[in-house]
Image (cartoon, rainbow, N blue to C red; front, side, top):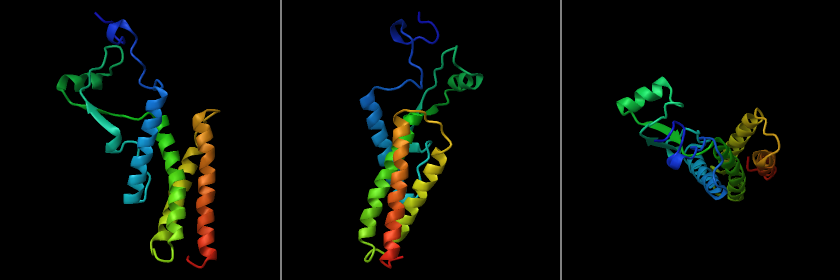
Amino acid sequence: GEEPGEGKGGRAAPHPRAPRLSNLSYKMEDYAQFKAFCHFLQHGTLIPPDAPCFLVSHANQPTAASATTTEQDQAKSGVPTTRSILTDEEYLSGCISLCHQLSRHAVTRASNALSDPLAVTSVRVARDVVSGLLEEMLQFDFRNGPLRRRYDGLKYALKNLETVLYELSVAGVL
């Protein structure tokens, strides 16, 4: 039989935080960015990492070595558990991509500001979301990695949004 913690064929099961194949990871980041943009358009806020679109339910079958008493009780009772389909890095990358998308979206909305009464509000909300995400990201220590380089781009997205708002005020739309 298989030992606890082993996958099929006697190989070690991958750790839940193990990196994915790069193409899948990029597509999951795109998915997160798409869902985050749709959420922003509907609600004007950043989508939480535990949003239903990021969760999947499954029957919990923990190994003896990794299961907690609660997990074992849930597995015995047949209560399904949920887990995120995204890694933390994919979620954060998707949110950072969202900020760049919001910057482009704000330019489009601002170009129609004279005929669109909600354009300025939309740009302000986008700026507030990007600013809030940047403030939260400042608490992380990213070292030198892909997430660090993407995080550095957040500052430019925020600067672009503030520039759009400034230009709207100069044009007398605000």
